[in-house]
Image 1 (cartoon, each protein chain N blue to C red):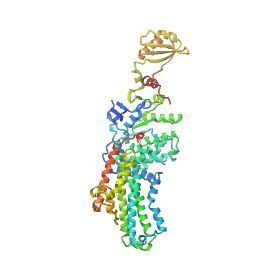
Image 2 (cartoon, helix red, strand yellow):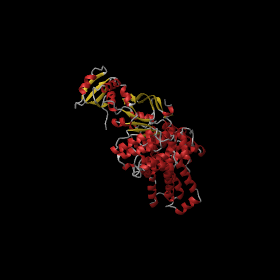
Image 3 (cartoon, chains in turn green, red):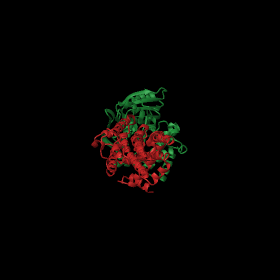
Image 4 (cartoon, rainbow over the protein chains, first blue to last red):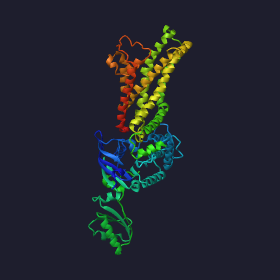
Length: 316
Length: 288
């Protein structure tokens, strides 16, 4: 059990914009690692991030990050970096000046600020463009320079609002690798994204939001396991799918079995995946079928998103 | 090296107060802001405002207008006092300060760049101080220069040798310093007011015009109400008082030893209000 000094804690947090709901009754405890906020537009992802960083103040409830309340920016931002979605910059600055000037505002001396700026620029592969004006950067470069600015002071918590937007596939892969590296160094990474397969690939846990409410949270497979109203769908590649189908229909937890179009596999929907796997093991051990592969078909974020939120979610 | 220690201490959360860190942060904010104040596109208007009295005075340097008062050296202190009061103090410094100080925060809300400060490990009160000092430096540099150049431009082209003696041996230098001092005080007072207006009001032009009207009508107000203005205290310090007209309600000028501390105290209170506002401010660019 982590102590409050190691967690990001939302305690019954609500935020209303006048009469419009931002988020409602949010209770969350986020441990180190990569946590993704997922939900359709207007779900409350950015509101949650802005609340976490004190850019917004909760209407009700309280938020602490590693034990620090969000209304103390002078303490909070020693430990927190936030890369927002606002695609705007102070006028006339170069990439290096942009990072450097806010490190000086943090209180670092000139020499240390220069060192930290350079390290941050290297991490986002922008050293060569560092002395060009930000106004002349492409969208992807502007995204990266904001990312560099948010990590330059070496925060323990990094909050990233749609950080992969505008990045080309190569830089996207590099950036995800960077996130993984930062998470392996013990950082908290809170990431919002529409790109479900990337979230699925990099997240340790997800928080699914819809209409300002948290609809699910936790490890994505754990969330999927708890959704009893949606039977788990499993694809079994084997030599005799017809025979296997007859066999699985005898199990009362199996609700559907359907042959794959190529007749070399069987889709099974079961309410109890553990019992199904046990049964399959017995069948294989008894020599009833030769199984090539077994894989859950809807055990990913996209499926969970579809079941809980009712749309297929974005994919780009 | 000390800054690295400060930041490390702050990172561990064991740093209650640290003046050294705050001063360094104020200096960093000042550098960023002063560059914006002098070199951004918005600063063009400020240069034009600061040059406002210089153009007519440069013309007057070439052509002496008709009228005996323009041929009498002794009248020049009165002429400058009128120019200073009507043009420099009430118009140029007023609107110049409005533009500079309102833009310190309002401009960044419009540009959607204020969040970078809010996401830095800096007390928001320190941010207010840093921005205010940068606005003050900008307005003081520009408007005291205008005050001094306008005075010299009035005197020297017409009465060079008399003016030289007036400024080296006579009362000229003390008058020049007094006007410069009033300009500084006006920047301090109006600056704080407009900084706060820019924080509270989405369209600051309306309160600026209301204050402008109040300041212009000050001569008609009863003595007690006169004191609820900036111009009353500034006028009390002018070295060559000018008549405010037949309809003016006469009130005793406030002595300098009261006027100056009063302005400074009110300014501090207004800055505390600004700091409170900034401490509780949210970033919602869509609604700003």
